[in-house]
Image 1 (tube, rainbow, N blue to C red):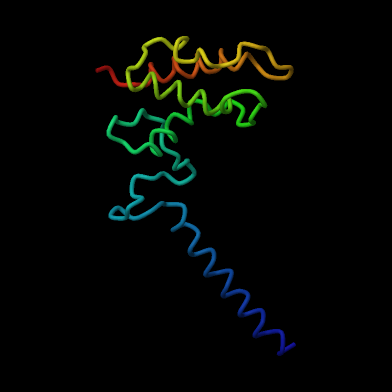
Image 2: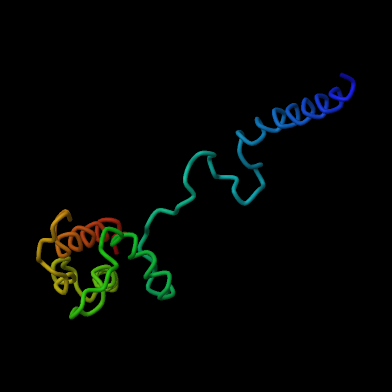
Length: 139
């Protein structure tokens, strides 16, 4: 029995230390830390915003990609690019001011219905473009 006593004491110490540290984790980061505004249990994912014209091409592509997330990234033989890449290009045209019409920006998208998908590639692109215009700050 005396050989089990050190193990039980060690286990009890580990459990006690773990229980003492749990409330500190639930409170959140200290006030001066870089994550001070973060609320535990919420996502750190930023809200999609239209990048400035001076932003890098990579930043622009990533931001526009959030609007086109429902588009297929599979390449179809005989078509230029993927539906996703064409949608991202359409978002860039709208954001840069080359066009103000979501339908004109998405004119390269397919209007054929695909079994199992909601809407056409064109309609999903137009919906995303309208959302981009709505989210964009008024100039």
